[in-house]
Length: 340
Image 1 (cartoon, helix red, strand yellow):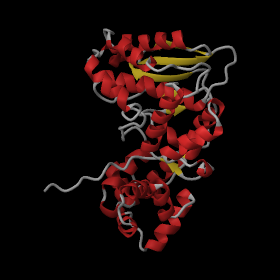
Image 2 (cartoon, one colour):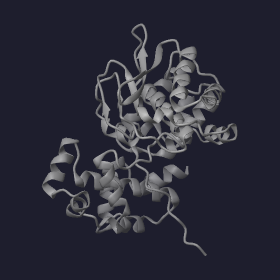
Image 3 (cartoon, helix red, strand yellow):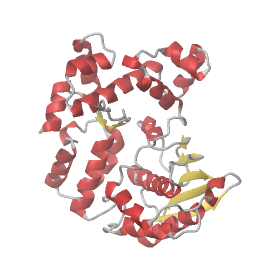
Image 4 (cartoon, helix red, strand yellow):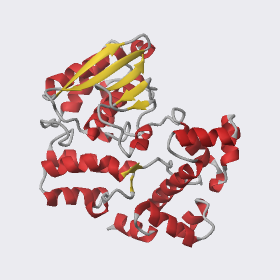
């Protein structure tokens, strides 16, 4: 009998990252309905306090619940409702494009027919194809809305090309937020803030790629949305994610700073300096992997003592203390909430 395979240890994002989304739901729906949608997705409103983490599954589940109950495929993030079927028509439109560049152009023209307060355009530089989102008439950009639109562009382009496409860069019109470390989890490329427009850049050479999908492929892509495109699969574009991958692949988290430095062909001091410049440290990354592994395994019903051992803690008590620091809850409370 084959051994069961553990699900991947996907990164989580901070609760602050989804707060704009939560606030848009409260503007769109009665408070009781929002609380119920959060409850069913595993995101209790009383825990939206800046602490804790949000998993890939929770984002996907909340998205699907909200779209189903509100009839808005962009969940109140724009000035008008994006009615059911819009994303299907978008995908059908780009399927008929002659190349990836033509598909991105169709992506922009589709949204310009739908949105009132933003304008999308496609430009070209010596090395990049760049899709821009520009607010119109002083519109106040939603951070989560701009992120989701750029993720949709990246997801659709990658789906058409049959592989996740690297990015030359991503920019946002708003200032750098306190949860900026969450963005590399979604976008495989350099990220900047305080830009004139929000934008996403693809290597210019990719524009000639043929569109390689059929209408039969479109159904499963839409049914699973946004599961296939919300988090990036790339682990090479950001140093913290490269170190994270080394830790995930090491037994019981036994990769230390020296091991990581040797793998990356730098000295430990250089690695410390580079991580500091990115606002993190080796220990912070290691703690993040431990946290995300624990959240994953609690969802599968794995015994807490075994989780403590597998994440490299000396005792269950030290694991409990760390987990409460990450989420504001004990592991048992977290698991009980998931089961109720």
